[in-house]
Image (cartoon, rainbow, N blue to C red; front, side, top):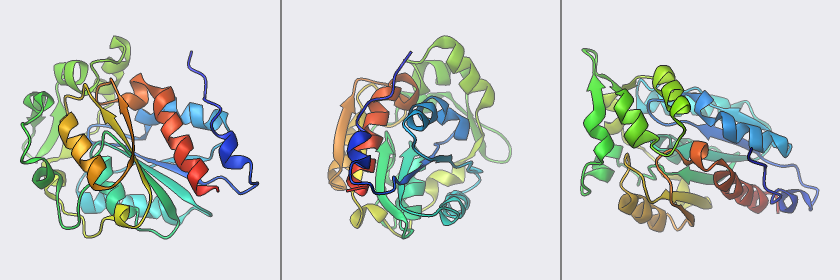
Length: 244
């Protein structure tokens, strides 16, 4: 069983109120995908909110995340996984957001979309396992989940991920952000070297672009499940920075 790291002590020594951690899931997921990470954070007394985005459009997801942020008192560390990085890039402009954490996520530039940002890189292998319905909503096949989205996650967990995946509209990946919060707020980035959904080279380039504090893991696209402790440590670093 994983145990929560002790790095939160740095965040509380000053007596300042710890920020709330708000978690924004990626495509083909919902807030429950963060469950292991939530347990680690809560074990250290961190208030956590997992947003439930509809995945119907980027604008809808940004609006949903902003509503979650508007309900909170005090500072926020805003965390985005995968496509969720596009969401936090704009929603992170909210005044209460004091730090951004990208977990194998899209850190977009102003006026850019996911598809535009990724166009100069070879398509990742996972996208060979995406299926579209008549309304333009995309799902991943079981092979796509087990061999590409979460190839380093236990088999029984990948079956749950497949069964509970949230269909994502194809148009989400063409939505453009109007602002880029990372231009004015400190950022952290978890690069996954074995990722088959976002090219690791693209992750590294985005992390460098936003001048992020970078942690590199030998992990697939779902490190918050496969390498939960290491991802928690990055979030605790961001908490400590905000709570100084």
